[in-house]
Image (cartoon, rainbow, N blue to C red):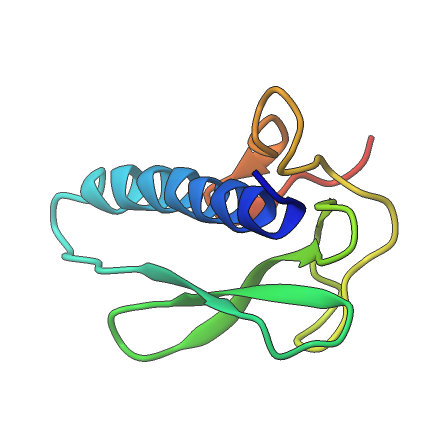
Length: 108
């Protein structure tokens, strides 16, 4: 297995895990129907942006993933991640240890 394939598989697994978390949260609202989806935007040179799209068409950044090492980073804005990794898609948790419904946790 080459590094590209394992990176792509780890990324797909990470996004699927995040999507499950978001979908479960959407189901918890009984009076409103949400349909939030996550998608991969690989256009950046160094980072892959994971985009969150809600049922009304609103878009925001869920998180960033570093293309070179798999680090998961909180968004500082639409175009750039915050410093300091909040996990890694290659670790034993597949980057999910510090993930929440709206993205990575703040550092404590």
